[in-house]
Image (cartoon, rainbow, N blue to C red; front, side, top):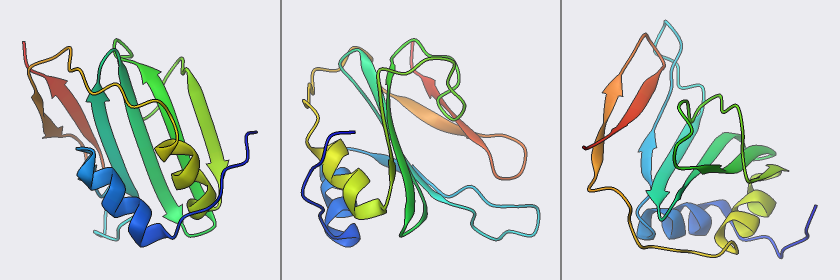
Length: 120
């Protein structure tokens, strides 16, 4: 695991928003938020940040053709641990902002789920 200087959670989330991350908040059947999840497709990759608690976060970089971004079969990079460390590591990745898609939208699924559909 690479070590990156941590950033505070609020600053890290604001930096993700500035980079174009779209956020969803999966919830359970009663409506309680289970996590904060940010997703951004760019270049030929998809980056995902999942915040379960301040000491429990995961970031993943996937190939853009991965079918399920929430439970991927393959990934190119992954970091887990305290949110401050994971955010710093994610923000330090190369940031290719050349889009390969023209956009898309979130489509809600069963309670607590959503899927990003790329525009064709």
